[in-house]
Length: 230
Ligand code: IPE
Ligand code: IPE
Ligand code: MG
Image (cartoon, rainbow, N blue to C red; front, side, top):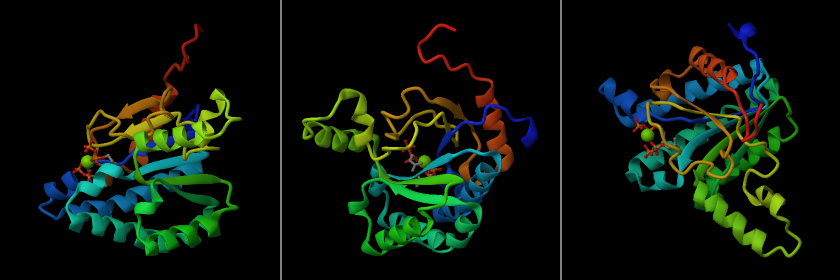
């Protein structure tokens, strides 16, 4: 039950995995799994608003995912664009600020324009910040940050995180990965230094509110020590 949940994380991040396998289990094309995965995005976004999670970040497309067959890449780009085009009104109603982070230079002009429009339209919403990582790689992020950090003579070591694309966003308290894989796959390498991890065998298209609540319950029972003695 929602009301029994304590210790709600400020920032939940999800590595949404298993769409292809979900489709395969049903004898369908992989893209069918991606399509159904959008419904899971809606479900966890809505639940996050309800529960008071302030930041929800989702790994939607990695730098390495560019190496998938062209057909799947195009289908994913189109799907993201369509999903964004339909969401502005729901975001306004729920107070959702939408942000895309990653190597935007690799995205098409039309997708970039759609992203810019939705980010601008939702910029002043402040209930939940929904971050979509697209064309993102943790190593790329650290490298681009290091370059800018090194070029700034006034930069102090403790401010390094301000050069990452996630500047201003608190580090994830909880990272959830679906589909049984237990790896980071080049996701937020710096920012997850002290994150709690929950791995579930559930495939992303089947990950809905109940699964989300059970991950949050697991998190609530964790003892975060940050290297100290309690
Ligand atoms: C996650 O599902 C979505 C992306 C990585 C874009 P996958 O497409 O990786 O699905 P599986 O892991 O092959 O089942
Ligand atoms: C990680 O999933 C990337 C996203 C969820 C966007 P992958 O399916 O690409 O990861 P690997 O290849 O199994 O590590
Ligand atoms: Mg996968």
